[in-house]
Length: 330
Image (cartoon, rainbow, N blue to C red; front, side, top):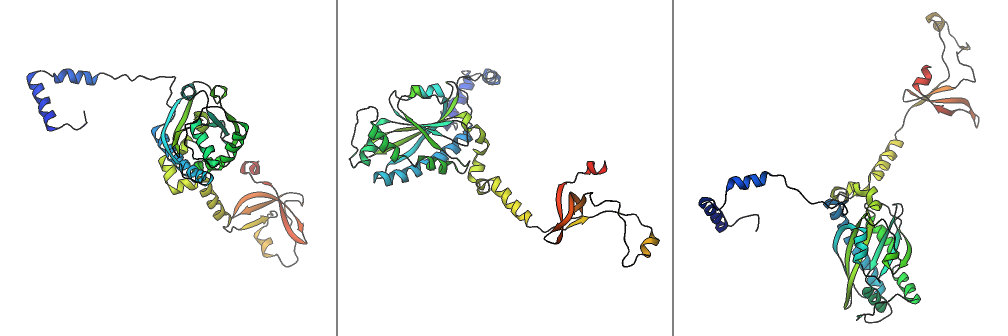
């Protein structure tokens, strides 16, 4: 039943109340009772709906980049699109993929951990067939890749690290790297069995052959950038540039602001009469010695200790330390 009742449904509900078929008081009591929601601790929800929406947009961009790359390699336009973005236990993901498949393992530096891209063997053989000038008609016999096919497959996806980096650049500057190519998921130890992983399911169609690509990333790998996986951060241009860039711009502007710097060589106590009697050639004896540090003022505020000397026959002050109020008073 929809949330908005039709007129006939409203009339039937009022008739049931009048005839006593429905007791409003009991319905209210049932509504007031606390509702218990079943929660499976083995299937922890680590990603919010907002996170999943942003991750979907990111991987839709990933699909566009991959389509552009494969179009040039295969000399035809494959159909690639995101089908779902979900979070499941790692053990469930491993059990959901076939025992003989194609697995690419990538390092996600500077993030900790790795990402795996699982590809249906049918689309892998279709791409290799198309890459070598075939018609990619299929279906193909499922088997492990030969040594020559591994070389061709690696060449076909050698730009994958840069595609991943481009898809994630609005969130973090990734430097992905290819680690290994596997065929048996049981040998893949990406994380613990109960750990929550992000699974992005992508459909790929090459010619008459279609299949799925699954990207699996552990929650622990994405956790450091979860705060950036929000619509505001992803859509707002100011956030896309990143706080670091904004801070660099502010720093550059502040560094170009001129400030007044002066050095206090020392201090002396004189009476008014002594000041009035001063004339050219007189010497004022300071309380400091030549070995004592001089105080450097920046815009009228003490900031550094300096050592007075010469550089290239010009009087100069060498900064020897930072001024601290407590140490100065002591």
